[in-house]
Length: 306
Image 1 (cartoon, one colour):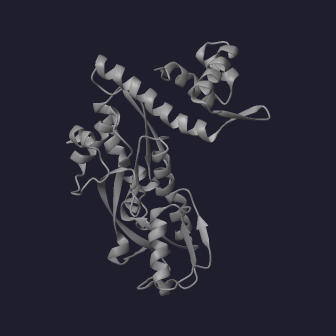
Image 2 (cartoon, one colour):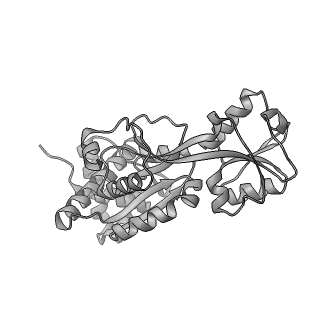
Image 3 (cartoon, one colour):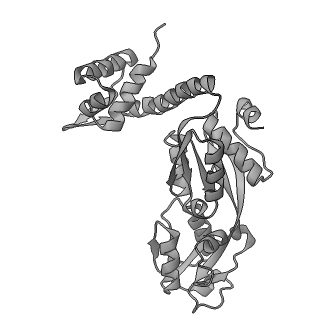
């Protein structure tokens, strides 16, 4: 029975990544007509349209997006098979996601050691909120991500790696905050929706029927902390971030209820871990082991990282 060959998948992925046939052909050192023919043959074999033309641009159809996910996985596995048989060590690009806080306060020593142990791997780090990162893992846009509780691990393997203590921060002019009501109608400063820390803060405020006057959204902790220090409002941050940014003296810290402050960061991934991901899993387990079950993992994955 005929199957999809890897070369056709590589051509398909190149068209997607380059945004068109001509640029893909140039990258692959082929003539455009050859690329067009291979895409047409792939569509005929699958019985679906992979692209839709929008003016001069090509956009993926729903079926095309599905095939792209599988293409990324299959081509990665093919590369791994060759590299493992030749060298037995991981090689190539490793796309990893992380929370802004984790990247800034936790990952530097881990990635430094990882690079020393895996010199053939190039880590491509992207940051985002927990919600955004989980979606990217589920869509195979990144191999794994460091995310924060609370989140729903459906379809994901999870490994708790760091404990975090969350604190409420205000300007130095606000001396005490015993309950959410002490904040009055001041401004909440946070990351965009999808941030798990923001979710915890909103749950705490909502539990005491406190509604902030407004919410200001930032994309970095440096901006958030500077805004809080200037007296614009309040925010929730991990203590480790305040230490990493040397900001402990710039703001006042207020304790939160334990159900809000006690938090864990998890490494999550989907499916069988690659050699590159295995190396990271083993490293973080050795660096910061936290006892917990690993739901959703396959028996093979368990044996490979034990």
